[in-house]
Image (cartoon, rainbow, N blue to C red):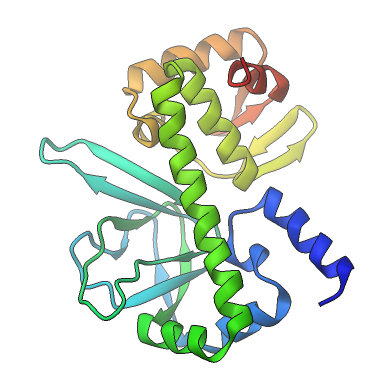
Amino acid sequence: MTFASSVESRARLKNSQAVRDFLYDDPFRRLQSRMQRPVIHKCRGSYLFFEGDRADDFYFIRKGKIKLQKTTSDGREIIYAIINEGDLIGEYYGETDGSYSYGAVALEKVEALVISAASLEDLMRESGEFAVEFSKWIGRKQYLYQKRCRDLLLFGKKEALASVLLELDASFGIPCPEGRRLSVRLTNTEIGALIGLTRESVNRFLNSWKQEDVIDFKENHIVIKNIRNLQALISK
């Protein structure tokens, strides 16, 4: 591995959570070799798997976006993460049987490929380089989830929402004339479910930022017009 490729990979790490962008070329090719056909197709609102299903497989999202959600005993929805194309979802329990602790729901048309947990484990045994890079990716994911929990504990509601918008921008932000457009379409209820806010609270903060020209709405997408304003909220 050259110094240039190492620098390139670290640069990609800063901008993407997706396993396709995180792994070096050779480890990702090894991962691709374990992906099973045929391609799974899901339409918006369909489940890739349900909470409580046996966690025997991982899913590589070739196209589309997925939300990982859990329903509480009182019927509230908690969203763990929004997964972009090029990423991998699943849970690994080693030699013990386990079940998914969340459901995976398509936010739009999705194409996915299956990688069995057993095949992934074999791959980690066969390639030390893959095992190291894959472990780093898992660590990165855990860090981002822990960061959101920290934000909820340390920040107020407004700051936590700003942090989530910045997190979404890191994965789904696309440059546009007005600033940065989030390519993922989420309802205010879904945004609130990422950080435990009600739809009404999200509405109030987003409308306030719109009036302050920090964000805008274009065809059901959020456009971040002044990203420094959001960054300033969580850097105090």
